[in-house]
Length: 322
Image (cartoon, rainbow, N blue to C red; front, side, top):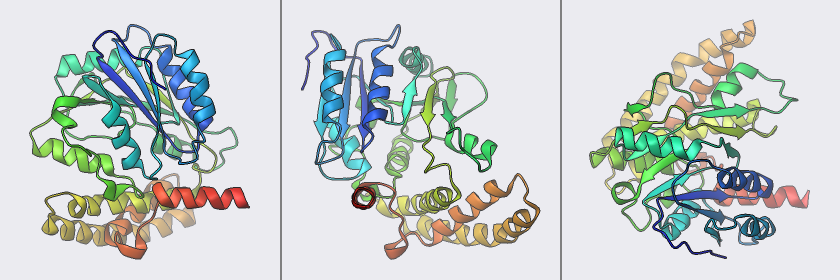
């Protein structure tokens, strides 16, 4: 379902979703009420062959009014697949990503595009404020920071990129390939990290939009030690695997990353044990970094952790049968 626009589009707002119809509904609605935003279209990509988000999409198509809205299905499970599908449909000068667990503040898009104009950056990132469930009973401050994205200081160029959620990409310099997001990262994530490496290699720049805020709603299943372990281990995979998965493989940096992981894990293991005994506030931080180190070493074959794609689909099916 597509509504065409009569004017040239400045922004294509992309929201990939996987079995989160309520989250997709909230995300799209937050885009529809943006203030002072330039011309835009909204693309909702359902990464479910069974089209679990279609009833919500039908409702949103009516609510969109004059705002061009497209609902598309990417049946092949995988976060990179979903992003690539949406990019192929996007018509805007800039592509903006909002995750299906994020809700944007009303001035989000206006502040993102203003930051791009001020900095001239090829990719611009905005801050994220995590909202944890009320029943959250593990280190609150740590998990609040873990799922949030904050950077002190004003809108400016930055050197270190962030994740794809709440980001604006300049189409003509960043999204030049038919599949800009590497499908090799479909299950582990990190498809954005691989793309950012290519941005750096081509001389591109990153920017920070100080006031382009979104909220991220963290479900109870993610605010746990078990999820922290799995995600930290997967983050480690991405740090090493990105050197193998890119088109121009860099085996030297891949091996260096693995050695760094060994050193990181060995150095932090005793600290984790001590902090665990002392029940210290820094335990979660050290525990996370230790598992990231292990993930850098054991990033291949049977050790790979699947957070997305076919692995997430399999988990979803198991939950439905239970």
